[in-house]
Length: 100
View 1: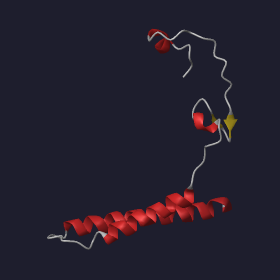
View 2 (view 1 turned 90 degrees about the horizontal axis):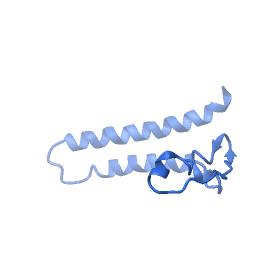
View 3 (view 1 turned 90 degrees about the vertical axis):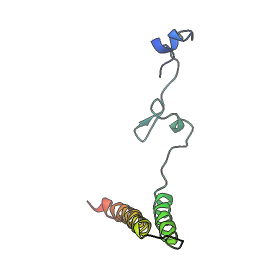
View 4 (view 1 turned 135 degrees about the horizontal axis):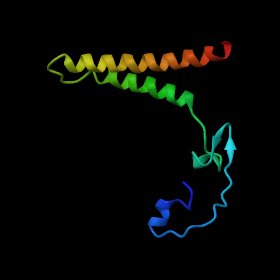
């Protein structure tokens, strides 16, 4: 947001000339995401895939417990299968995306 915007002027901030130069890295501007300017801008797909499998495993581990009914178990299995499928699908999509 520019420093000379009307919203900032209404709150008492003085209107200054905008001397900020936007930095663009891989098509992402520092005006949109300030972290791009100092280098911390990236994704960790391997960590995300691992986290999906970890959540699926934790859901399956939670099946052991003092559940009286089976509704909790059904939800845990459905959520675990969904996380596993999403993580596996993301891995397959990333592997085959360069071939298209």
